[in-house]
Image (tube, rainbow, N blue to C red; front, side):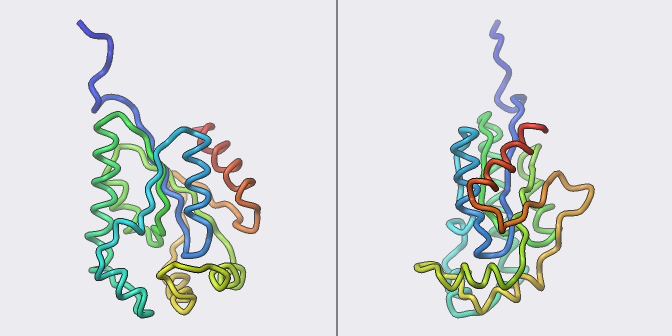
Length: 177
């Protein structure tokens, strides 16, 4: 008889670094992944080409555009959980209902919200190159953003901190859980 638990009984944790475009999600999520030895996924890479085309043209996504994408992300995390693997992902997850979809994937999802002002993020986005999300869509993201609620497993961090500080703060918070 084996002492190892079946993969579906191994406790995994899935971290979603969330926030509007330009908040530093990818950098912080990659840093968390490195610090905690977790595989990293960039949610933007899961978007179908139609979504990327819309955003590239400055057209905000609708919920109908987002739902299949969010279900794909939840399914990816669930598959990783079934294999006994925890993960970290950079994903906007702007609305509660989007986070609820993500929570329907694996058994345990924690959110790290990189929160800050529109002006700070707009300056960062203006300096970025080779990203499909134009600064013109930033206001629509702020209009959509619903901060984490008290019953959601998550923490809001001030994105004015350096990426290194944000990674350290997120890792410390996650290790306390």
